[in-house]
Length: 206
Ligand code: GRF
Image (cartoon, rainbow, N blue to C red; front, side, top):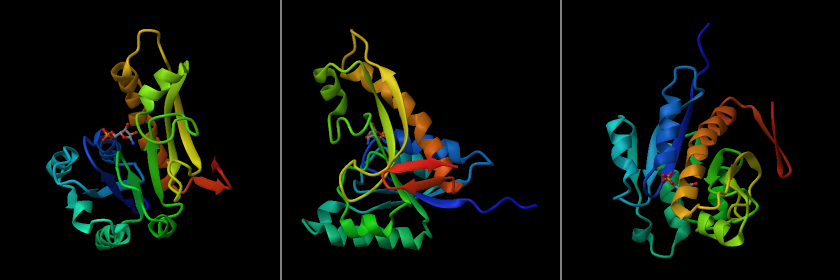
């Protein structure tokens, strides 16, 4: 019996791209249900692009600056690139642009993100510094479906890490990042295998 076709996935990045690398590494396994067919960046100097090129993965650079304030035109350009590569699922991985409601609706249930905090705590930026400042004892990361509201979509997986007395932003970020690299590929595996069911704000795994 032939294995089902792997789902075609694009990863959107803006910088370092370590989560994208974790997704690519996982997808290299023969039994992984998805393949990364495109790495798209809104910044030409995103470090992750070199890794993708070295892996022989198609890359695209669509610089948001070229579109000024016109978010819809930027999203339309991204949509065209995604369609050109036959993309079925989108993973945001450190992608630092807000997406239009129209784009989010088009990809509803097919676009996921990783956030470096235990949502709904610490939405937005500088999550590790804010966690330290708030004095929480447990911190972590979350994968979720993307909806128009920032960091608000249905939660898929979470991983918790302790906050230690001698932590600073860098040590805490490193502990969380290790978990990000574990739960993001796992999330994509479940999504591409059709094992996630959205029920209101809850995501159930079959
Ligand atoms: C990660 O911490 C991710 O959770 C957040 O942005 C960071 C991106 O890091 N959304 P990288 O580019 O994946 O290394």
